[in-house]
Length: 246
Image (cartoon, rainbow, N blue to C red; front, side, top):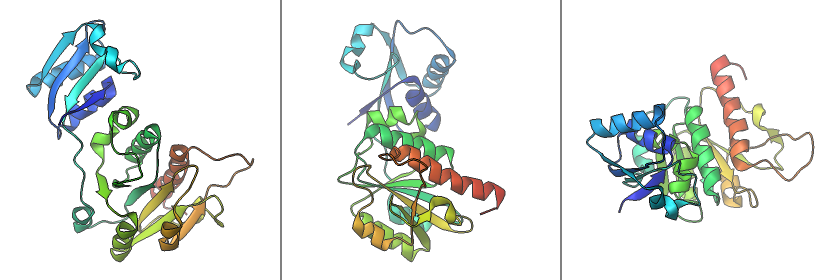
């Protein structure tokens, strides 16, 4: 069954990636031509995808979303199997593991950050976590089409597989002793586990982790948004990779 994605970035990036079947693109007649919209029409023509200009009332059912007057009917995301991912040799690469993230906007923002940071893939559980939906796609600004999403039935089993394949596991926890920048991210494959803001990383995953880190705070407050926290940690790893300095 086709899904709906909306917004210029989401539709454009899906067209650029080209690995998902797009059935139809609907564009509001009120939309003024711009660079992105022209590119969408150009790529749609190249791939033989139908696009139609329709009255703005056609978008009334999507009024709760910032659809920018454009939606597309598209095939669902194809999830990658963890075993297939691990078959390839990896060197100094990274993964993000999401443990119980409940907000679609956070998942979308995490995906966008992960792509910018060159992360190799994102692991999500099949239950008790946001799945990929239209809000995730829109919030990711189309980045969802540029990174493998690995769905697993058990995060514990997934972590065990990673450890057996020489991946280092780094969990985040506000009460950890080590700071996120104390870890030397160079010369190793590592996976960072991000937990829900209210619950954090589960105890079973903390026990399986090789490192547990926190982001130091100057002022005590509730906590950072999970997507912001991930950005801080992963770009410390990027800094170390680019400079070669821990």
